[in-house]
Length: 400
Image (cartoon, rainbow, N blue to C red; front, side, top):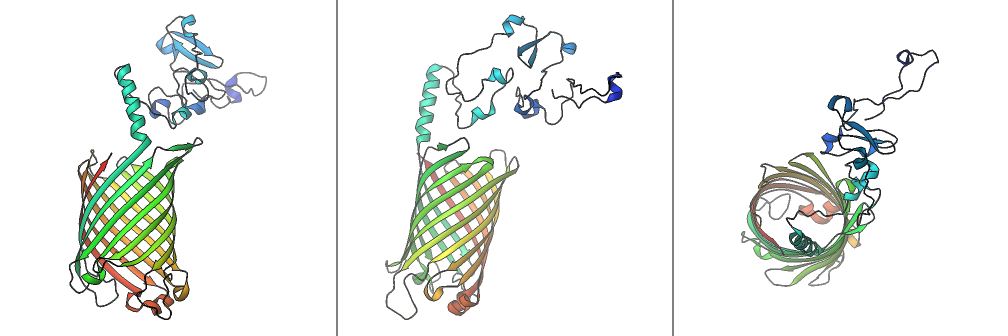
């Protein structure tokens, strides 16, 4: 129970002047403990206050003071109620539950802890051992095949060419158990690897656009309170031609990303991402030419994206995900220095999680790009475009 406001003078019934009298009342202001979770006592109500679990006048029984300033109604003998367990709890941080209020659980003790439900002692040992093994090193692999139709495969503002595209990818992710950094931050080291090949149906472009791509990325993810997370990493990218097999370029790119997840509903998530990436590129030049440099692709990229994840059923098998993103890329070296690209991506995807290891995704996407005046001069027909893509993806994944 919370203290009420001081009684007004005319309610005191005394001629001694206004008295700062406080009284314990049955009226609770704000969210009640039972609305938080069964049996929970709100910690904020414990400081210099009294909390009556039940009204002894209504139910009957005896109001017993378990600890100074803390009362509980009971039908049990007072001596039995006064027995307070003093044996330390292994791994417990902060006051014992009985030091807060009868039946209370210190919320701070729940961070970074694991609870295992087991039938017997042997099951408990097995479950705890298995849980530790599962969480120490996480290894997962995926493979996917995506086919899509695009109305502007060359990404040019005129002379648009249509094509079907097939992309096949294979990836591997390795992460360790989270490492607690204080009470509020968890760090997760991870390594990601991916290979992708793309082929084009349009005969005019398939030899020039077909590519093989590889990426290795290592980084640290930091999980913060209130569904914030920060991801840092450095990746190495390699691109080569599917037609000739020759290397086209490679790049080292350190990056940082800040994400925030909102949960406006039981089946709805809103994901906001901001990112920054600095790419150090090195092209392979078949011949030397004035004004062309191997590293003129060095750039700084800033990104902002918003995605809505809406589960359509209780099991979470069907998911709808609209998204929109804005990217600004500024080139930093040689003749390209001062060129700025702006790109907007928007799309909608519908995912069916057919099995735990298999998912199908159908989606439509729209993208547009434009450049500043310097980019228009340097890139010509590629300085702006609009494109629509419509595709289907099948993905299989397994966690070891």
